[in-house]
Amino acid sequence: MTAGNYEPCLAHVVKWEGGYVDHPRDPGGPTNHGITQATLAAHWGRAVSKQEVRDLTLREAGEIYRQLYWVKVKGDHLPDGMDLVAFDAGVNSGPARGIRWLQAGLGVAVDGAIGPQTLQAAQGAVNGIAVIQKACAARMGFLRKLGTWSDFGRGWGRRVADTEATAVAMYSRSASVVADEAGRAQRAKVAQSTGATGAVAGSAASGMTDLGNWAVGGVIAVAVIIAICMAVNAAHHARRAAAYREKQREMTNG
View 1: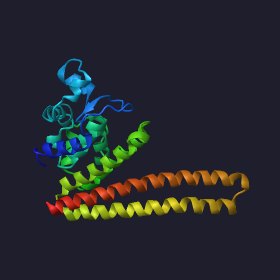
View 2 (view 1 turned 30 degrees about the vertical axis):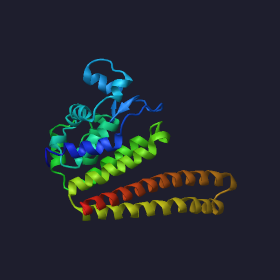
View 3 (view 1 turned 180 degrees about the horizontal axis):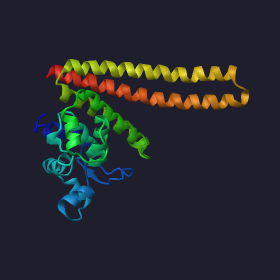
View 4 (view 1 turned 30 degrees about the horizontal axis):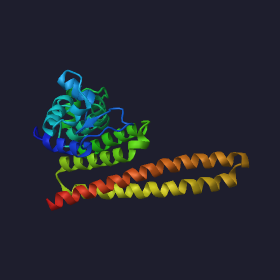
């Protein structure tokens, strides 16, 4: 654990947040470097205009991130990688949620506040990589249920996959470990893809031979739902594998 991991974590967040955007489907409204109009107003203690959001500097955005997000998730007290998991999720969905997902990964009480129990579990974790991956999986489960998933889901999925791979790299500091995780993610992708194909074919065949005609449609419908879920999982595992491979290349090439 280091207390100096803020800048690498901030760089990761800023990479995904980008510059000024004002998407009509984004409930956060005008945003620059990931800082919303409401967040900037809270920071300044007054109402702000869209132009003031547009003019926000990266340096000031970094100061806001530290005060309103990093400090709240107690990033300086978390192991490298776990700090990124809580911080990036906190920026994306609120600090309390970022903390809850980390707590879910740690297997401690999920209350959205980092106290002694959470810190002790994080600092003493036997398998920090599993903690990171479970926390990111919990985050994905939440995002998939949002009404704006159809608009932003692909980007969110890529971001969570990249966050996971970057966090594992920070935690392990090993390109070979990252490469191993890329292989596991790829195998999970293949398993889910194969299962999705087999679910429809197998259930349909079973329904045709073992059930009356009135039930066949229901069996197939259930199989299709299962197949869709498995296909969605396969797509995310593919994103995870790609993110791990990219992180491995970065670590290997320096």
